[in-house]
Length: 459
Image (cartoon, rainbow, N blue to C red; front, side):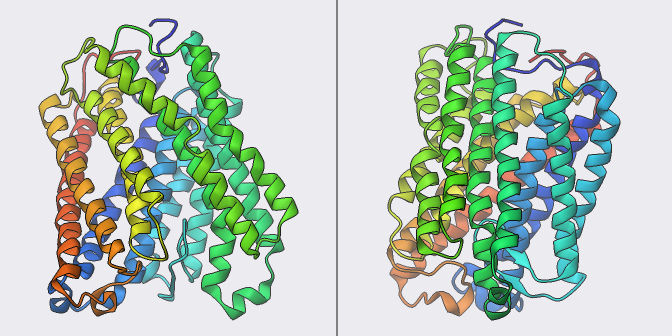
């Protein structure tokens, strides 16, 4: 491996080790999220929502879907990356953390059937107000933060400068996640209990507002890490030096230093606090991602390296960059509380998901899984990306018509053909994206079930 290759060494222990279990948990979370999202899409589509009896469950389905995607999927994948460099002597603890997190994820998934069905559609981490859900959330968080702590303290020494840069990016993302945890505890202690009794939706919105914004930095740092990891497998020349990448990761983490100051100086239930956290993410979360995207676009367009132009790794990076830009631009078009908001964050979520899909294709065979067909992997990425772009476009278009977010059925107010057309586009794109997601899971699980007799030891 080159000194400047931005990737982790895959050891013998990783091939059948605990890291694969974290990846499996991440993939299983998408199975649950995918089943639930079909209900959500159909409940929003004109005409169809009149033919189905369960649009009343839309809000509950939305809670489970969001938590399985932007929380369990992302953090389980983060746990997978965090587990890769952990010393073999600590793998038993990694498996214990995985068992705890898996139990929590199962409770989150089935919580609507295990207690009161009382959804609160707050931002970032929406909740069901029943004991099974909160217990599951606590268990999943415990498992994740255990493996994150092990990754920060029980890591093998870096093999070269490139791996040292990856360690820095991984450490920064996990450290920000711990900041989010501290912020959550702080918010729980300092928010008045009376607020929960008066308005639970507002209480949970404030409880997760600060931690939720910080977690976006964790995800973005991991996304940048994966971008350069995949790109280093595609081109022979160095796009950025290890020191340059460390600087980039440091820039990405820098804005989060404003969070403790904001937390200390402003009241959690004040408009100033909410605006300060929003500004931190809006103007700080691209501090590393934007220059990283420009470097990658230049580097990948300059040469095709060892792979052809349609390799899954290349497509994953390029489509991820496109959705990153798409979501970012839409974010600046938000006016009021309408479906332009989910259009913005769906672009961002899909961007991260595409990067993680590409990494799954890249790493599974190296972890002992069956080789994945590059042709089918590429088709899947095209299908998922194109469907997602239509979905986001339909939501953004509907937002310009003032269609409200977090609504379904007649509550959307789709009274004219001009209102209905963009929501049909949204629904069509969503279903295409779901099909693309199913193909991804089929390819990934087939690789898990198979065996690569000669897995590579390094990426």
